[in-house]
Length: 240
Image (cartoon, rainbow, N blue to C red):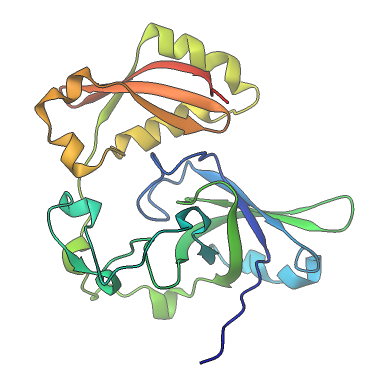
């Protein structure tokens, strides 16, 4: 078969500067807002005419951060604690023969720019900032919402949730950034509630001693877990 050439139509701009902390599926954390920054001619208004009639969209993307990663026939899903191998096609792991991503997101609005172009705002994104966007398709509930479908080893929400508390230092450090990022505190809480730690780390007895850093925008959010509570310790400018 001859080579297949894919052309990105733009990039997805998200709060995530690294993979750690990104929700494990699209739609899990609605507080994660992002924009689709489109290349010409796909940024023209006529290319998106009628999209406002849909509440949700499928984003087809390219896992650009997996350069050099070797696709394998089996992978260790983090959900299973890294202790079991499954076939790559039975998972959504990014290490694939072709690193194509599929994310279901909520359409927030279509922004019309002064130059006549458009920018698409979405929510519930599970993508690294700068992810190349290959295509967008509307979500169709009558064929894609299947209550009787079986979800294999991921049939239900993992149930990994943490209570989130702010230390006085953490709350004070977050406050100055709300002018630039109005929903920063809510975003931090929503992400930590989902417990972004790999399953094998969450099960370790010495986790109480570990301080995590989660990069959002140009900030480093520092937190630790104690007795099932994620405590936000500080918010500092990300080191370059």
